[in-house]
Length: 85
Image 1 (cartoon, helix red, strand yellow):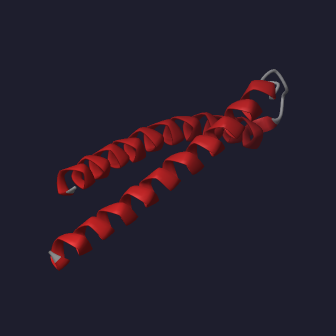
Image 2 (image 1 turned 90 degrees about the vertical axis):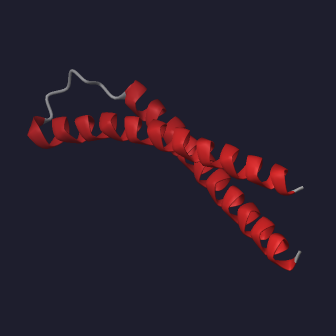
C-alpha cells in the first residue's frame, strides 16, 4: 500500500493546489469586477486607455474560465481521493 499512499498524498497536494488557484482567481476576479464597475467608460483617454479597458474585459473572461477549470480539477481530484479511501 505504500504506492497507494504516495498516490493519495499526490492527489491531495494537487487538490490543494487547484483549490488555492480557484480561490486566488476568484479573489482577483472580484476585485476586477469592482474596478470595471466604477470605471467611467465615457472618458476620452486615447488608444492606450481604450486598449487597457478592453484588456481588462478580456481578463475578466480569462479569470472566469480559469476558475471553472480549476474547480473542475478540484472535483476530479476529490473524486480520485474518494475512490482511494
